[in-house]
Length: 537
Image (cartoon, rainbow, N blue to C red; front, side):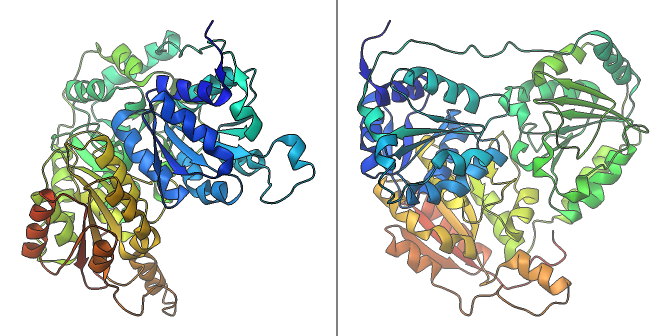
């Protein structure tokens, strides 16, 4: 049995044990003991300018080190600021432990200033909520970490009363053991093996849960053995290196890409859904196959409650375990008409890289100028759809984004998190000018922490995707354009970094080359014309 400590220390030590080395937030008097405990446990607390951005910085770190995000928010408005990023963690399957301070129960009976029910606020967008008690602090901490890190990851709240944080605690050392890897078995496995043996046009749609199960190498070997092309969700880009002949890139948002991918899906005689979570997809991918007419095997992390698709065979199991159980089936010659190569060629032609300028020119030049090891982030908008098709990923998590909740501006703090967790690799965030203006103040945090991400801003003084939809519906132009182009590069300089405005590919390449050698962050404002996404996404 461990010695006595504060309840807050028990929580902090469990987070450290889970691999957490960074926490983010803005403290108030109610969370000072929590901050102290985190620091004593070896978890650096980083002061941010807004709790929402702090959570996204943490997500960037998570995609490098795999540990849960630690977000600290004080009572009332502190937590309210964090609601968006907590909802994002729930929808984007990001493990997160949210630590909030609250008034002691007796105090709250007669004092109402900033008092609200934190657990009730976050209950709909978290996997679990707890109020810390001193007697069971380490048990609650272990539950929070274990639930956050389950195979379908997400956020968990621990609400910490002020007096409890400082109360003595004797940890009991309870730890939940992670489930053993489960693989298919019995009649279902026999049928799956038979379907695979008979397949001549097998196709894989892979999702983020491939990475949760560390099965990307197994997936690559499986795809090569059976000649199965791989389509991914956007967050799973790179689970098969995208220069691979069988890699068809990400899907889910681009109608232009769908014109090539969906016909190939329709031709498949066996569709393998491998760690595929359709929360990233849009209506165009709802029930795109009929399991009564096409053979579909769903290898999933959790049971199907979404009903965006159905399957003839379904296994809730470890992704790598399932692929291994099928691996020794004798492979056949597949896709005899070279349909996969033709589709890959057509996709490349639909997203050419030779534009002189405009959004496609910015993306193509950035990809050519930045090393293959670059870690990138992107926020929401038309630029995200185009970049997610054009940005090739040689490895998993080389491009991170908010793909389910789709939060504007998140690319900036996520790029900061990438730079913090992996300072030896370039980090670049792609953001629209609208999103940039939402989070520009957080660049001062990057300056204070000596982070050096490159932030490339698509400057067209417009909410380009919404303006495009508005125009296509022949509605009056309203509330989608900015009256003037703001000095985006100047904002970067004012926040403590470098800033430069570029108007062509040569200027962009020069700016990136300078930024790679800079000792601070760099904001590159790429000024483009409006309407540059028409016909391109």
